[in-house]
Image (cartoon, rainbow, N blue to C red; front, side, top):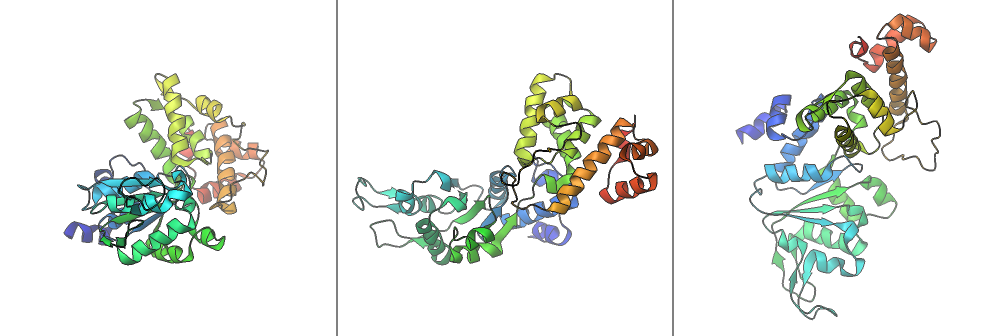
Length: 338
């Protein structure tokens, strides 16, 4: 409890983060605050919703919650809602007894009962049908289930970790999420940060992943290139990129390899973006435009080896204007110096 209260009062610093989450990268204040919330969530019995885009690592954080919890010696049962056939949803969740429906030749326990004393990870809740969502509401309210065809209530002590790749408020408004389930999940929600929201961490994350996990060097120019890309596939896309490049580069990963892999233009901007195919989930125009501006200024600084007067001339603006933009966007000029 003393350790819990310490983290509750003081948060998690970089060293404590490495101790509690040895395989998680990132050290910005925003990210460390998120890790604090993950740790605190692991120490109580409340159910949890992890909401975040594809590739942000929701399943990975769910495993961390399990491993840090008092239930770590019990099993973590997983259920992906996108893989459940709607006709057997209740049987999968609650189980059934022999003869309860055609084809039920034997008694079978459901995922909720299987996770008794442990944790049930329910992934992609947006793909669970209304019948299944109602069953979860009943379980959250009553902490018990009845197998299909049986009136006997079984008390279940299971902690739920539920993930959603889409905003649950929007899902509820669109009628895709049971309103009762929405209200029960809202107080328990943790939003998993996207890679682009951790922009100041990108340089550190990519460098540490290459050095510590892939045992390969990565050049400063390559890291600058990585910082300029929006990474719509989040951590999964970044790590896949670095994994693939490490196989083809024995000593180090350079910026040209990054550019070639991502298929970017010279300034890293896709000029053919179409609104009908653009992903607006959790989109922020100001952040997007700032990233573009940061990328263009970064390229100009790279081409001029960090000399701001020359970069300003390339960009067609005054040097003082460039200086203000560099400060506003928190651009590290020294990365471009040779």
